Amino acid sequence: MTAIESHAVIPGWNDNGQPLPDRLDHDLLARAYKFSETAHLGQKRLSGENFVSHCVEVAKILADLQLDSVTVASGLIHDVVEDTNISVVEIETQFGREIAEIVAATVHLPVLGTKQQRNEAIQERLADPKVFCNGAMIKSHADSPYGVEVLVRPAADAPTMSRPAKDEMGQAFVDIKRDEIYELKLHNDGPFEVAVTVSVDGIDVFTYSDDRDEKTGRPKYSYYIIPPKGSVEVKGWHKTNDPQRADNVLSFLVTEYGKGAASARGATGKIGVITVAYAACWEKEEQKPEDEKGARDSRNETGFGPPVKQDLVGLKRHIGAVREVISVRYTR
Image (cartoon, rainbow, N blue to C red; front, side, top):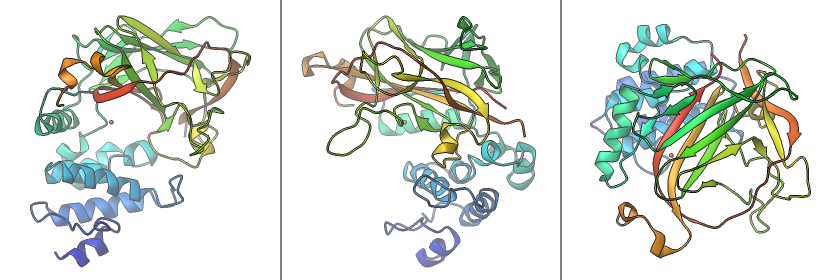
């Protein structure tokens, strides 16, 4: 298959001048692309592009990481089950069991490892996803210093309670019903600060923030900073750090599919998934951790609940390599 033919089969693949690598199974990738393109027909990204372009970008990243044809093909169809009516059984029928079993993974990444070792960790978890659930605590593995709890209240005036998580085929699942409000408690039992990104339904929690960078117009903040041996509560979508406002956070409210925060922006990927990524951080260069030296029709989604007040303050930190990614599904 020539570069021209690869572009014709998978539009956007060689926009940067790099055709499909010869080592990959071109026929498999072409089939996976057409399957994904058909499944996501009519779905759009925030940019207005067809959603399948996102799938192509993911597959290109996996190819650049020198992963195999099965993994790259899985990248092309990774959102089909979550965002369409196609089942895992149908994917298994079309592409076999190995691809059907590759799902979004909870991953622990070795900071001191080489690029190859980090890539192998990703590949291993894609092929065999694992998670550790102990009551409401969710970790990538039992000894991890990082964890996530989901706290739920059935109504705005009800108390918040931790909700147990279950391991379902290697993915954490917390059952949150429509019209329930939830919060996240992020834990850091490690010896240094960590910077944490949080996305819900594929939307970063700072997306709707009123605190904007004057030059770029983008949200001013990107991370929650957790002190060593500490924890932070994320009560909802960030609006502002202004302590005078009682509505500086909009709570996470599970609502009808099509009426949530992701749908409000025209996004259709990763609905029903909470993703938390941990990275070490430091204020001064001399505080940099040693291992950073030299070294991402009942369906529900999360919308905007009642405003709540949360004490927030802006900080500046250097951010290191991602150490942990924890995904939690809250709707089937």
